[in-house]
Length: 148
Image (cartoon, rainbow, N blue to C red; front, side, top):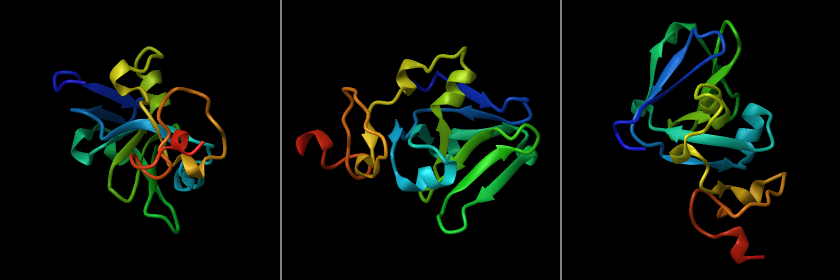
């Protein structure tokens, strides 16, 4: 994504909107146990943005924030329709689901925002059969495919 491309996401009812600028820090499948715990999902297709590149342009006062009791993570959702708009992590990234990006982009994920890897794959609960690199810990380092 070049700096001229901008995307936005919004909740189902339209009360909250976030403008996405520049490039995401990560666009990948996250398999970490923290995301599973916070979101109750087996893995998360994410785009992670620096806070300054995922700007709430509408309805900040319409967001409810759930702070996880033991993790440095939050889930930010619309207080009207309940849709999760983004969650935050210990790096203070705004993590936006690729599903939400798809819903707000004619059911398409722009090519430059699609997952290009898996990370925290050693924590997975579901094996994924694809050609993407599967980093065991974090977004780089040892690969699953090198050990199997």
